[in-house]
Image 1 (cartoon, rainbow, N blue to C red):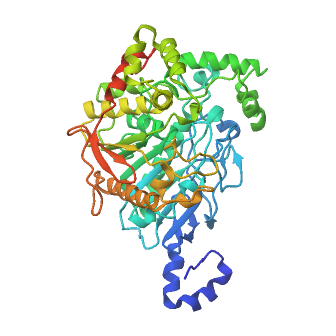
Image 2 (cartoon, rainbow, N blue to C red; image 1 turned 90 degrees about the vertical axis):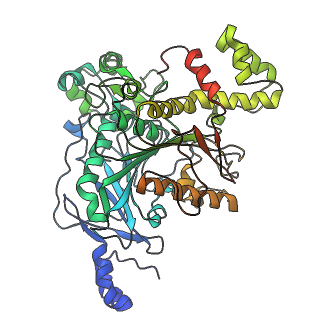
Image 3 (tube, one colour; image 1 turned 180 degrees about the vertical axis):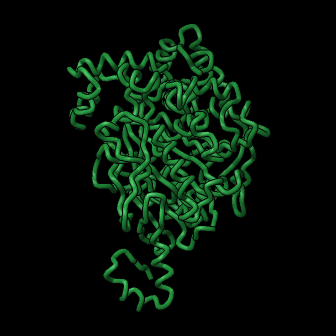
Length: 520
């Protein structure tokens, strides 16, 4: 039976239905946090308790807009925790994103806890802390593909969070730098640190172990994982890390100094006709979003702020100053499929090679060949995926192997999902792995899942939760996953799981030399 003990008025009826067991279950849905009591609900046929929309920081509005997160207010009585809190204000939403919250708002610093129904305050279960993707510009913890119905059934506590995005999460101006005594920006990343501090203080009451926390994320969430491992502010708040498709050691998504970015974004703010921080903080949310969504607006992204980051992330890893913790990381086979149109010809690809690499085009074509049109299309997907996601993630793994002094496990996700509403069904595309990791395949619109998809999802949930428990993904009933730092073997996640060496390493070694600009 599926009992929903959410309404105090049905307590007597529930007691009759459940007998003497009812008070224990009712109590388990009420938990006392550092801010006050919350009341959650049962999901997944009463196997999991969900506590949704709990504030981990004060609303970052008014005078707190573009400031580091502050402690949340305490409350009296029992706070309802059965609905997701608002997602963070955002301009663009990727077509494959759906939400279960009430809408966007600047008052959005909420997290959700999913815990096994029987977990108690002394259970000390491993904690998995999820950071959603979306390029630091969109997304939410309320997306159905991130739901916590299933991972907790593997013996873990799952935490999912919102964090400030885009202009609200990463704006840097000279006035903000002055106000911050030389530091500004990275508010979205500071939100993650605040949420981790909340977990440290509160998660034991939900059955979790604050001394065994694994941070994991996909795309921008994976960029954030690699960044938090390098941040002095986050040290000691987590003990393991999982990165899915992304790292802050490649091109893009930040890396400028706070001074460089402050000048650029101050010019943009001045173009809005705003003359002070007070005026800027008084602007309506929609007006700021509208201005930030125009083509001439800066890319609001992480910076080297002198506080959360004191140097480029790659420099921290090179010096061995990052967190020395077990890392599981990888990417998908067709990360670049979204940027490549069908119809690529061998001749077009050869011309592209010449434009990109000139005298080195022959060397490039040896690694990304164009023997025929089909091969050229495959090479275009590979190159776009490498420069978009894979190269930076590869550098992260390599850096952790070199200086991390902890186990490293690497994977390559290769199973092309069946066709669905937003995808043609012949790619293992960017973000394709999320539903497999969370066991939420049935939340993807229009997909007719096959036995091999469900089998792989079950295996990936096993690997991910085993890693969270012990720092080793291996376990009963799973194909052996060798350590990448001990022999260079990675796991190929497909309809049948296999292991093998890194056969495409020459591509990334070429990109180390061949890409223009800073490729740290």
